[in-house]
Amino acid sequence: MVEARIRVIYGDTDQMGVVYHANYFRYFEFARGEYFRARGGSYRVLEREEGILLPVIEATAAYKSPARYDDELLVRAHVSELKRASLTFSYELRRQDAPELLLCTGRTVHACVGRDGKPTRLPPAIVERVRQAG
Image (tube, rainbow, N blue to C red; front, side, top):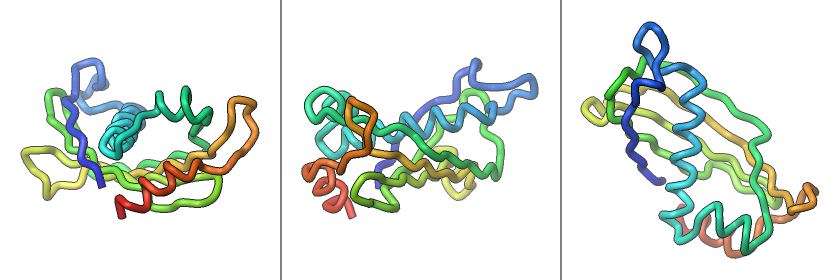
């Protein structure tokens, strides 16, 4: 599991001062990037050197409690399912100053495709990094 921290900017909120629901998916994306960095890689390396892309093919979020402007969020991400040509990330969002309060849970499923857009196996190096993470 990787923990990423991100502060809510004013532009992330709606008229009620609450984080707009779609922005949680941006926070998930931020945490995924941090996950790969923590494992010694990056999306850029996957795309340029490995020649693979990981498009989101399914995304869900369950909102429990609102996040607001200037909250510092703790986003936890881990790979909850690993298959030959796909992987699933699961997420938890909490406020840094109230980690017992669950704000949102989510999940994204990613296909592994080549530059030609056709499904392909996840590279062995990526599979190994994910497995080592536990």
